[in-house]
Amino acid sequence: MLDYINTHFMTFTLYATLFIEATGFMHVCYLIRDLVHAAAGKEFQSQEPPKTGMTWFFHWGRVLFSMAVLCFCLAVTIEAILNGQTTMWDAVPGWAAVI
Image (cartoon, rainbow, N blue to C red; front, side, top):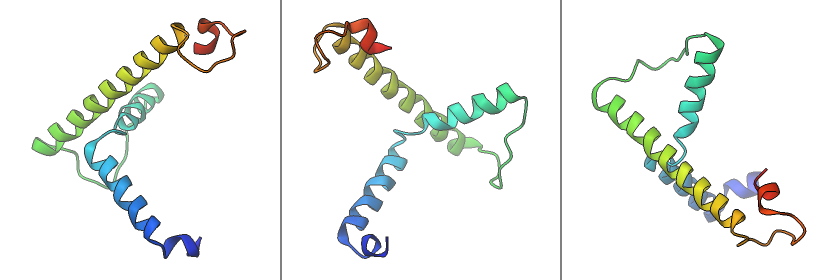
């Protein structure tokens, strides 16, 4: 692990992950976290103060953006599978590939 930390590839990986976090592509996980806490009937506890104002707006804006990207990718993938535009074995029907 120490060999990885002292390389330029680690720096690239760090900046790539910071970019992904800043754009909000993975913010749908916060929605899932909130839904699981609501289903369990427990309040989410955090050391951070509650989001207000523009912070709240940008947080939920990123969550909605992430959800839209996820739904689009899922729709494209399912469409390609059902149209047979994949490298799935010929013996497997499209509906089974989705499952």
